[in-house]
Amino acid sequence: MSYQLGNSDIVELTEWRRELHRYPEISGEETQTASRVEDRLRALGPDRILTGLGGHGVAAVFDGAAEGPGIMIRCELDALPIPEISTFEHRSQVPGKGHLCGHDGHMSMVMAVARVLSRQRPEKGRVVLMFQPAEEDGSGAAAVISDPRFDEIRTDYALSLHNMPGLPLGSVTLRCGPVNCASRGMCIRLNGRTAHASDPATGVSPMAALARLMPELTALGRGHGPEDAGFTLATVTHTRLGEPTFGVAPGEAELWVTLRTMLDADMADLVSRAEALVADCATEAGLEHQIDYHDVFRHCENDPEAVKLLTRAMAAEGLTPGDAGQPMRASEDFGRFGDHAKAAMFLLGAGESCPSLHNPDYDFPDELIPIGARIFLRAVNQLLNET
Image (cartoon, rainbow, N blue to C red; front, top):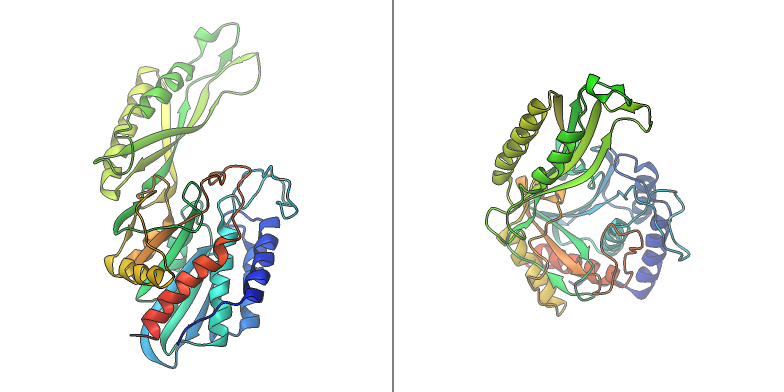
């Protein structure tokens, strides 16, 4: 048995991808996106559809004729809180938000798999198509897995991809082991006492502590990239000091820093060093401080058996995976599915001249829709029809 994706499928899915692009929704707000996904899936008649998974997640189940292994194909629903500056017709219609990571394209690939499976069920086992919410803030996969209904869609394998600007269009990258860094957002609040701007000595300003923390936290980084042993990175992403007024010397400040390590095991040490530095700076300046963590991502690791399955699927498409671009500095919450299945993610080249992910002028290359879909379909075919 072989699965075929027709030209009409590609044309319709390209138009759907552009519709998704026009109406982006950020993490936790994907109500209309999930509705668009559900409407398309219901028209294809899967055996089951689960909605509201871990928030706004949607899963479609296509059962085979006989018992067998299960395979999940996962994509993401959410967009980014970044204004899009592109001028093409399908540009974002939502101010301040845009599909600038390609999740609209990833959804279209997985919907392509659904279209083909609706015409030809697998011989055995089952396929779960998971449209996951809230990937960008790291909360979605954990929420889906914590949902009591997750047991209904638990599978033996879990596969996903991410498009990657900078790699040749349509090329593939795949490796065993760690492929995405662990990361977390560290929110530091420094509290002193305000004063009149004409008499700052009567207050306790966090200015000096803030100025010290930015370079010293950054200096906690080690190595040049994830391939270096013990790689760590601390990136200042936002800061605020006092209020926008000329009459008041500041009494409080806020600093946001992203902490990043290649492996989960290294994160505790980086957190400990960062927290000790904050405490030292605050104590020296006579400040109180609080630290909160947000957008917590574990590192993502590819299972050898899942990599083998994808490698065979790529070979059937005439593709040979390279190792450029992996492991990635960027984080990805797909790794959590690896606790419950043999999981692997591959990178699909978006073109060497494509704007980078999260750039305001990025747009997903539509040419990738059939390539990614066919790789997933090959993997499904080889696992559920040929073995």
